[in-house]
Image 1 (cartoon, one colour):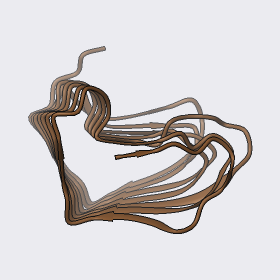
Image 2 (cartoon, rainbow, N blue to C red):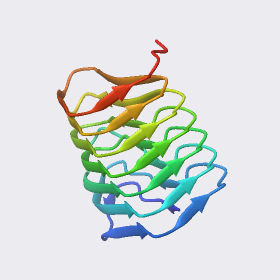
Image 3 (cartoon, rainbow, N blue to C red):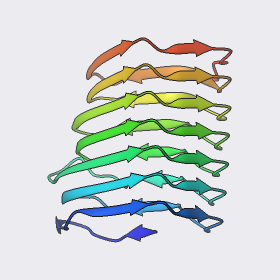
Image 4 (cartoon, one colour):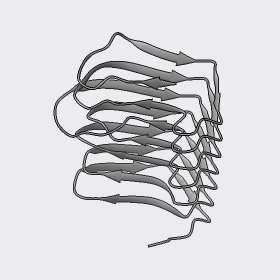
Length: 171
């Protein structure tokens, strides 16, 4: 599923109750540079894709969006499980993110990112990476990844109530 919008406004978009697998690139990708809109990805199985399972593209300039990623199984993708790189608000809750080739969940941009009640296990890189934004990382299980949680490049971080165990640091 590709949402190919670069700038402008999109209507509320929902991707639900689907299996998204074996694509050459990302499972779900939005070119969200300067995007204004709302996207919900929920109750899907996103597996075996050639890059990230879910990716919001990039861009730190303009746009205001709301992303909700909830109750998905995101596994065995070659890249990061959930890669939130665009501005706005992103809520990542109740997902199982496992056995992906890079990070479990990685977020960066100007906005607020809530990463809550996820099971993040067996990813090659760190379980959670948060870069320069407001991050709430709460009540996740982060186990047996290439590292636990990594935060850097400024920002505001609230990290509470997580189970972080048996991770290894790669850097």
